[in-house]
Structures are given as structure tokens and as C-alpha cells.
Length: 336
Image (cartoon, rainbow, N blue to C red):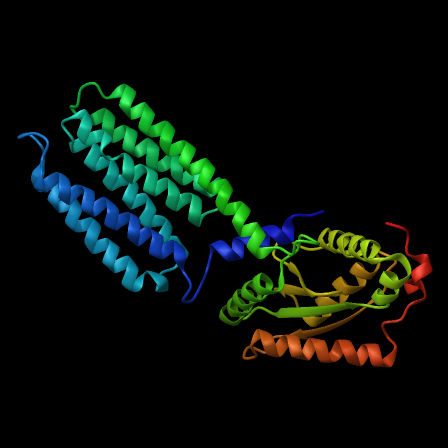
């Protein structure tokens, strides 16, 4: 099975637009944590040589940025959030370089762990690892520049802990995200996740002026398969169809299961003519016949309206008998 639809779904879930931007809230929390740690260091310095003024300045900066991110970060482009993480890494490195004791440097451990948690929560596995390396490398460079003695062993412990947190939390997040977003039977997007991703695809199409099409698919005679061969065979058929269709899709296309034997496609950058050609290719990959209806964006319709249009065309096709095909006979579908 091609993982392109799953990758598209994951990409959509991690690059959110509009009001729901959890990665922004988490970034604000990380900045706030860093600011509080620096202010604590300034209020209760470990030694007379501690850079109190610098720690106070870093603490105040962290809190101000946290408030700014929380208030206006939802309207920022995704790239600004990435820049925010890099700036955070630089501030941690500066705090490490300014520390004069091993305790002061190692005390930045919670910031490293919080940064790794944020990266694992907000980005793909590859991006999270890249940002983790950025944070840990910059912090280590700052630690090397500090005048603290006896730092090597405790700093190694901090680094190992941060790496373990990054990997373990990242795996947990990806597992939970898949569980929440994917249909458990077929492995394609479930209804809720597909609708959320399709809304973002449609919004992007409006902004860019590119075409956007949805296709609703309903199997012909699926009840007969269940009645004659059993529900296990029906489930196997749904899995096989999903896998066969997924292999024909582009990276940005998204296949979802609305429920039962009804599926739906989100096709960004695709006109109705192009979607029609794709539908014909999909018909050739399996003997089971099905009916399809499609609708393209006119720049104003919501995703629910497009689905209703596509659904109406699908059932008009069924009533006209266009969904029937001599290959759709149940006795020609191979055992699964």
C-alpha cells in the first residue's frame, strides 16, 4: 500500500491554518518555562559571579515572547513558528555560555527536555530530529564556551535524557495521531480527519486560485458480497480496494472512508476533467465496480456543499444504472 495519502494527512495535521494551532500554544509554554528559569536564576544566583543582569534580561525576553506567541501566533505563517524554535535554541545557548557553574549549565536541562517535547509534538519524525539536533548542538556549544568546571558527565546525562525524550514522545505522538486520524479497517483517513484535511485543502485552493475537486465513491453490490461471502470477505475487499486506489494517488491526494462502503477523495490542484481521468484509472485496478460523483470548487462553496453536490451526482449515476458494469458481478470477485 502506498503511504502517500497517510503522508498527506500527517502533513495537513502538522501544518495547520486558522484557529487550531496547538504547536503555537506549546511554543509559548516553552518560552514561558525558559523565561521563568532565567528569572529564578537572576533572583537567586548560585554565585556572586553569576550574570544576574543577563539572566533577568533573558527571563523577561522569554516571558514577553511567550505572551506575543500566545496572542498573535495563530496568525503567523508556519515558517515563523520554525524561526521561533531556532531563536529559542540560540537563547538557550546564550544562557549556557553565560553560566559560571556546572549546576547553572545543567539547570538548563528542563529547557532542553521541553524543547525536545515541543519538537516531537509539533513536527514530523525527520523534522523533530533535525530540530532536536539544532537545539542540543547549540546548547552544547554554549556549554563548551562557559567557564564551568566538572561539566562533561552531567551534561552528557542531560543530552542523553533529552534524546530519549525526543524519540519516545515522538513515537507516542505519531501512534496516537495515526489512531485518531486513520480508519482502523482500511488504514485510510477516517471521516473526521478527512474533513479537517479537506477543509485546509479547499482553503489553500481559494488562496492560490488552483482547482480543487472532491470525489465520492460508493461500491455497487457490496451488500451482496457480505451476504454471499460473509463480513470477513467484505472487510478484506474494502482493505484491498483502499490499498489498490492508494497506489494510484499523488502525494497530495487524500483518500478517506466516510463509513460503510463509501469512500471520498480530496484532490487539490485537480480539475473535474483530471479527476474524471483519475476515476477511470481507479476503475481498472480491481474487478469490483463502483459509482462515483464529483464536484469542483467554484471559490466559495464549503466542503460540505461540495460533498453534497458530489453525493447527488453519485446517486444520479446509480439511478441511471451507470454504476453497473459486467465486471461487478459478485461471482467474479476473487476470494480474499
